[in-house]
Image (cartoon, rainbow, N blue to C red):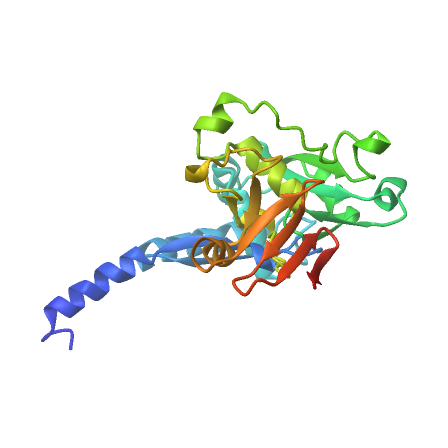
Length: 280
């Protein structure tokens, strides 16, 4: 087949090259802080990377804190060391106790409850609805190669109770020029929407807001503004298409984060932070 079908061979080669990637699987990360990474690359790149990974892992066996770790565990540690090329080079040259030469920034946004703040509940959730143990966060804080920034979002009953982190009441009488003329939400707009809603705004959907589209509830070309308080909501790609192409409609009710949906058959659904309720 390879000898007789040159065109097909070339097409398959080009398609294979286009499918190269290195990706972290966000769904694999859980309360342990351990995640999975997958790679698909040219063997000429994979093979030397694998050899270097093993060489660093073998060098780590000379450190007392890792001498009893398995080779697989040490290879996983070597991934982080290779992110610091100068340290990796020093270890490969025999300086087995070489420390970090640069600090990597790690940002985590955690939703804190009253129990978290009081130290009663050791579990907090991040912006992607993943659970984190405070023990794991403390271990990250103790690492010398990581500069960890924890952004806390403490929900305590809203502005009426003096909370400045919770969504304020809708007051959009005077939109900024940007909100009126710019279609693309800013990074700050997205952060406000993601932290407020946390998940897709469609009934019964639990996809994390950070992996959703930032949708204009009233379409921008129909007079909708790019405002996170009154006209932006997180919709996963599937439900975004249902809203755009399949006759679903929704409106934001006060306070922000509460939505009224109508499906193509006229049935109504109320979506709040507590879940979805069908309305008769």
